[in-house]
Amino acid sequence: ACTGQGGPIITKLQGAISSQNLQLIASATGSDGGIGTASAPIQITIDNGGTLLAQGNSAGVYLNLATGANISGLSAQDASGYGDVVVTAQGSLQPTSPSVQVIGDNITLYTTIGDIGSTSSPWQIDAQPQTASSGGYIGGVVNASAPGNIGLDQVEGVLLVGQLSPGLASSGRCYDAADLSNAATQGLPQTGICSSGGNVVLEAPGGSVLDASGQTAASTLTASQVAAIQSRLHLLDSTGGIENGFATEVQASYQQYWLLLDNGSASPSAGYTLSSSSAALDALAPLAAAGLGLSSDVPNSPSGPSTAQVQAYASQLYGSLIDFFNNQADV
Image 1: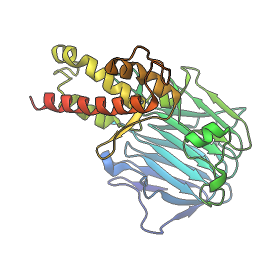
Image 2: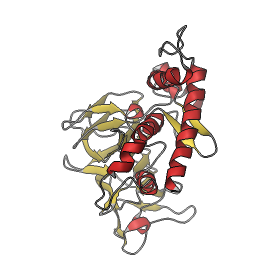
Image 3: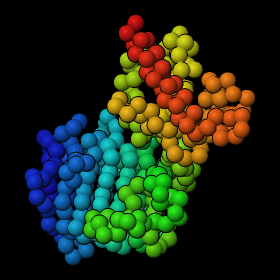
Image 4: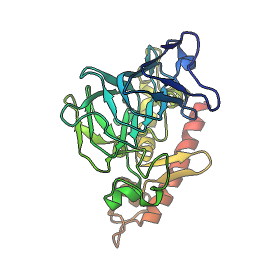
């Protein structure tokens, strides 16, 4: 076992761990309790079909396996919340028993060889989306890719499925033919749920299986960023509830803001970009039509807004909302 009681578990450049049975336990709190990082995952080889246990905190668990593994536990959680669990492998990833769970905020399981879980007895996962003020979700997105079968069972609440790249989604394929020569990915996508040669079983007995692209703004804001926005805009009173007077004043703007984030992406350098999906266009076309004084809110119809007009209006609206929030925060 490898235990980090006062700090994270990381490896130096070109460092790696090889073992038949491996336990990684990081028990520190905050950013000191992670296992690997998104940019530098722990490099691991599990010999002879051995087992792997990784328990980190809300800083996340990031592993890159040169083999497969029998998983006796994967979790990223502490009293402050949940972190991402990201495991890439070159062999099947299977739980050692039906009760073994993967617990984290966003969960990504990816292998270039074999299966992930079983379609006859799906692997229990517990992704942890938070409810956004817009009514959607923040985080809790599940991604899984394998050439074989994939079986996952979200034990509590909704299962939010990550979004495939637009090219793969429109092609009906599960692999990127232009990327088959990439030894690390072998053409398999690292977002969405995709089996290139097997079957997929997804279960959510306590909720629904949903397309995350229409439910969450996770690609634009983290939970901590949302909390910072709420604090900066004085949205919370001393008890943690919404401040009634201010909430009434900004309610319409705040709902528009989340509508934009749920249907596109934004950054300080690039501004707002509308998602390429037809659902996003349909969602924002009524706002653009009203703002431009058009008689129809059907996008690309003779009397409705064009795609370019919806994008331009959404970008302008995003900028005005940010200015409004900044002005309120300075009061």
